[in-house]
Length: 351
Image 1: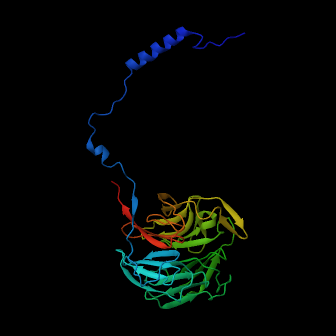
Image 2: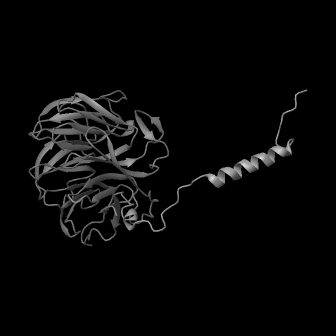
């Protein structure tokens, strides 16, 4: 019977192996760190851009209604921060330092979803309670209403819980008609119907809760197809161009003047079906993240924020982040639904 040759069975092999190891160790040359490494070697070890919350921003007066679910934030040409919440005073405006400027919308806006500011400085708000999109002057005067108030539908003059609005360079209005209809509607500057596309589904050009919408400087249309865990891209006529899948569950989108697209939401999750909608398993979301894309879909930056506990939200945490916008200095403003607040995250440069 064959007997395997082992080191245990051959003690003299142990001695030979030990001598070989000692010989190699004695003659090998190992790189050694410098005794005094140059100081510049450690000066730029941190190349990551980060953000620190400003816990004192903004200064909301006691006379203004307390925040409820914070659904949207936008920044105007003067750098003022427009916040939209579902409380008594839905529209509240602050300057970059956090000083309160004004409020309006009491008794007019019931369940706002997103707020956008066009090139003329006018304010656009979607109201999912009344199934309408309204254009306001900066002072709160109603200038235009798209849709039929309190009457949901799916034709040229009716919407069903529209979620967001984006204004193209020629004044055309793109509306994500999200919770009820799963479509995008394009109107002209006067609110007249031009076209619509999309239905419930998972194929390209179909949607499962188009939750936010923006356009870039070339009038490409970006849709946060939230429950399909993707961003879809279209040209100005609704022709499908691209999709960015399984990077983020996109709740809110914003785009900078340099065509950098920010998305906020959570990392991809499991889903289950209830009726016609796909719902996140174990909602609320498991985490809170920001992603910055270039317009070709490349991920340029990812930033995570701690997920808060309901009722125990601390500064720098988010709870169902719904909206995100960057100012000209690169600072981020985020609003959350369960956290019921807006927070300023100050950009920290690499060191």
